[in-house]
Length: 194
Image 1 (tube, rainbow, N blue to C red):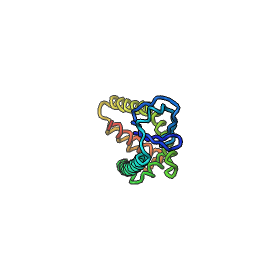
Image 2: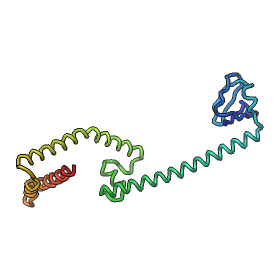
Image 3: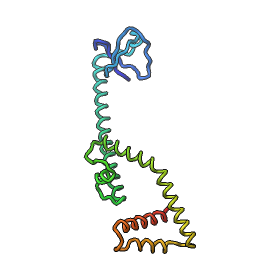
C-alpha cells in the first residue's frame, strides 16, 4: 500500500501498490513528494481518515528505521568478516596481520580514501590482466628451456642445475650474481610445482 494525499493535504488515500490509476485532473502527492494527476472517482474508494493516514505513515517510518538498523548491523558484520578474511589472507601470504602493509606493498597509499584505494587496486588488476599472457608465455618458455636442458643432458638435470646455482651463489661472486642465483632457484622451484 502507498499513502497519497491531495494537493492541500486534507484528504488521504491508501492505494494498493499494483493499482494503476487512470489519468485525470485530481492532483495527488506521495510521502516522498512525487506528484501525479488522476481521475478523482478512481481514488475515492481508497480515501481514509487523517488518523489512519498518520498511523500508516508512522508505521512506515518505524519500519524504515528498523530496516536501516538491520542494514547497519549487517553492514558492520560484513565489514568485520571482510577485515578478518583480509587479515587471514595477508597472514597466509606471509605479509603479517596488517592489511595496510599489503596495500603499501601493492603501491596503494593505505591512508588514501577508500575510493582512491579501490581505483588504484583496479589499475593494478588491469595491469596484471594485461601482463598475464606474457607471464604465461614466459613461464611456458622457461619450462620448455628446462625441458631442453634436461633432454640435452640426458635425464634428470636437477643435480646439474643445482650445481650451477650453487656456483653462482658463491660468496666471492657479485651481489647481483648471487641475487640472480636466488631468483633462478626460486624459478626452478616454482616450475617444478607447476
